[in-house]
Structure formats: C-alpha cells, structure tokens
Amino acid sequence: MEINSDFSDRVVVHSDQLAWQASPMKGVDRRMLDRIGGEVARATTIVRYAPGSHFSAHTHTGGEEFIVLDGVFQDEHGDYPAGTYVRNPPTTQHTPGSEPGCTIFVKLWQFDMDDRNQFRKSMVDELGAPIDGVATAVLHMDEREVVSYSHLDAGAFLRSDASGGIELLIIDGSITEGGDELVKNDWLRLPDGKSLTAVAGPDGARIWMKTGHLPFARPPAA
Image (tube, rainbow, N blue to C red):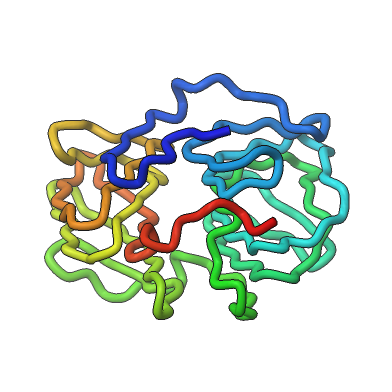
C-alpha cells in the first residue's frame, strides 16, 4: 500500500474529512496520512482507541513516536494524557490500549535503527519564552531530524528554512500556509528544499513539527 508516498510533493490532508478505517484490532481505528507498506509499514497515522480497547503485546522493530491528542493512552509503563510526546525506539516493547479511550498521532518505522533513546515528555512543560508571539519547545534533536512543538499567538508567523523536508500537525487552532487554511488535526508535508511560512489564525495555533527527516524515508526493512 502506498499513500502520499512521493516525498517530492507538497501534501495537505484535512484528516477530519477522512473516514475511519478499522485496524486488525477490534475497537482501534485509523486515518492514514502517509504510508509505504502493508500492516508493517513506514506510516504516519491518526489512531483512535475506543474505551477499553487494546492492541496485543508487540515489539517496535522500526521504532514508534506518537503524540496523545485526546484522552489517555496507556501501556504497562504508565498513563499518557493528552499533550504527551513519546519516543519508543527500535527494539522497545509494550501492550498499548486505553480504558477511557484516546486518539494519537503516530509515526512508525521512521527511526535510525541504532537509536535507543526512549522517553516521554509533556510538550507544554517544555515550552520556552515566546518570541514575536511564538513559544517553542525542542522535543528531540539528532543528526537526522528536529522535532518541536510551538504555541502561536493570533497573527504570529511560524517560519522554517530547514533542509530535508518539513512536516507539521495542527493540534489546535489554525494556520494559513501556501494559500491553504489548516485547522485542528490537519497535516502538512513540505518536500526538501521548500520553506515554511505560516501565519496563525484568530485563535492562535498549537503545532507539532518535524524537519530534516524526509531524505531518510524508505520502506520497512524486511
């Protein structure tokens, strides 16, 4: 399966307009944003857990990172409320689920295979002081990518000239970029060589962003 697999394209997905698709596990549905592969895939997905739903125990051979968008995600390592950013690198294991229900934004098979840096962070707690109406937290940085979270005041600009591609998810509020209005749960991917100039709407915006990573995009290892 291939969805938005040409990484030289600018892609906008208004994810709330997509139908939910059932996963192999009852009570767990998803909206696929990009994907290369079948059930084992390099994938970017919004996943919804119904109350009381669980996945079987599994190992993340290619790594997993996710943001909890609403509700509480749970596994044997603890509870992860909305606003939590988690990195589970290759070889990590867990049994995910949610008794109250939750929605997460998750990326699979997008790690350096030698990465073993596992952590969780409250994104809001990492924010620095605002500059020109933008407060930013660097959540993760390595030789391949930079992951950040930003709060934008109404009318504030978010700009990036980062090489290697730019990807962002609107967690709340709205922005305008390239003539498109993006609102809550919308997803934007800009190819390598394309800069970002976005302006926040009247209610401001909260944005998760990753840069530098697209040259490393490839199907999962066999």
